[in-house]
Structures are given as structure tokens and as C-alpha cells.
Amino acid sequence: QVQPVESGGGLVQPGGSLRLSCVVPGITPSTFVMGWYRQTTGQQRELVADINFIGATNYADSVKGRFTVSRENAKKTVYLQMNNLKPEDTAVYYCNIRNRYNGREYWGQGTQVTVSS
Image (cartoon, rainbow, N blue to C red; front, side, top):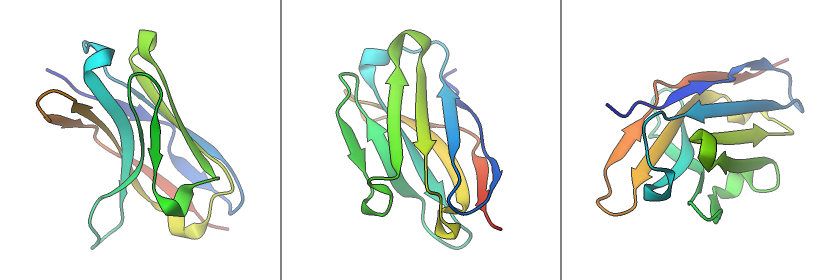
């Protein structure tokens, strides 16, 4: 059973920072693209950022220059460093891994990020 487990969400003031982590025990890291999506009430889940095994990254335009996705393959972990947070970044953030051979995806349970003064 592949189950991503997220941590690191919370409440932060505008302009602040948070770091999300997601560990996925039992996987072979080279098989998977790893990343983060977010969702607000009534909206579709959207890609925030992802990273492949060799470190190539992809970001949503709304977070470029503020967020950084990274991974530690030996630890089977993906991170999302979020800086200069804005109220519009408030959402539930989901860890996602995608098998690059068959396209199968696995999702974490989600972690709430709230940006408010």
C-alpha cells in the first residue's frame, strides 16, 4: 500500500514562510514524479509544483519565485518551501506521486495552509 504522508501545514501571517514535507515509504523513487497540489472549497485541485527523479521542476505561474519544490530520494521525501505567502495561497495542500511508466497516482490526506493576519 503506497500512502504519502504530509506534514508542516498551519497558520501563518502574510509574508511568512512554511515548509511542507511528504514521505512515501516503500516506493522506488526513480519510478515517480513527486509534487504538490492544492485545493480550495468549490475549486478544482490545481498543480502547485512537481519534480522528477533527476530534479527537473515545474511550477504554477502563481507561485514562481516564491515556492521551491525539492526531494531527497534516499529519504523518499518531497518538500515544498513556501516563502512570501499570500492570503490567496490558503488551501488544503496535497502530496501527489505519479508513476512515470503507467501514470498511476497516489495522494496524501492533505494538510491545511492558512495565510491570514
